Image: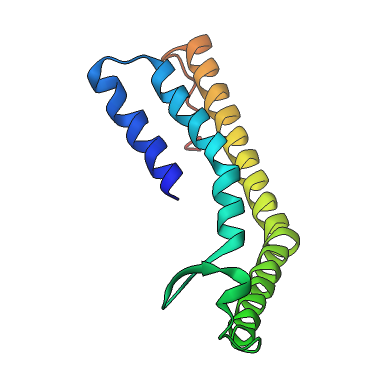
Length: 135
């Protein structure tokens, strides 16, 4: 997240000082190079109430402590997956059918409007009125 924030700040601030794309590109490359060591250090070390300690020495945690949170996360992911599947295979076809009906109605409306305009151009104000006979 810190790398993303640095990239956003560099992208916003550098043009104000007249820098081209090169400094922002250098920041991105440096952050990409630093990602691997940061990942390794995050894997080896852990923040504890006593400070930064090696992962193996951190101990003091019960293996069961994170299982409740893990179950909540898995349940949330399962619900999200179910929602996206429902949206994809149940709701999406209905939306597509509605959109197609709307497009067809717009095309028909445009066709009728074009027909009316062409008749008006062809005959202008001339029209024939048929009145009922009074006999």
